[in-house]
Amino acid sequence: MNEPRSGCPINQSVEVLGDRWSLIVLRDIMFGNFRTYGEIHSRSLEGIATNILADRLKRLVEGGLLSMAPDPGHKQRTIYRLTEKAIDLVPVMVALGNWGVKHLTPFPELAARSIALQQGGPAMWAAFAEELRHMHLGAPMPERSVMAELQAAYVAAGGT
Image (cartoon, rainbow, N blue to C red; front, side, top):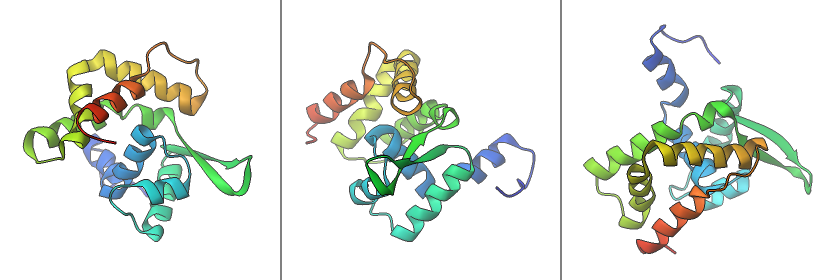
């Protein structure tokens, strides 16, 4: 990673996360559980170009937000996992979603997860982070599945 332009924590955060694609890739891994380049590319709602996706995955690995490992079932495929540093972004992602629900016009089914997380508050965010630690870092399985709750909210709002 390059030297930051300043010592300001907001500036340094923006330098790591400040382009739209980095946050979208993290969103897709965090909320969609997409783990491979192919899954992220084919299932992302925004249609990220292949060269941009490859660059963002590389940057996120270099920035310590993702780890990568060979897929034991497929020699040419890589599995991406969130790191603790990325999991710590759960409240940030919730805040971005809440801001979008409040000030923009998202589709109801796509807003449903943000609304559920907002209503669930910090306890739900912490439970989601624990579930992500299980899924990506091998931590013990938590009792609560926030992913299932978020999927139920999406379906209840008309998603398929």
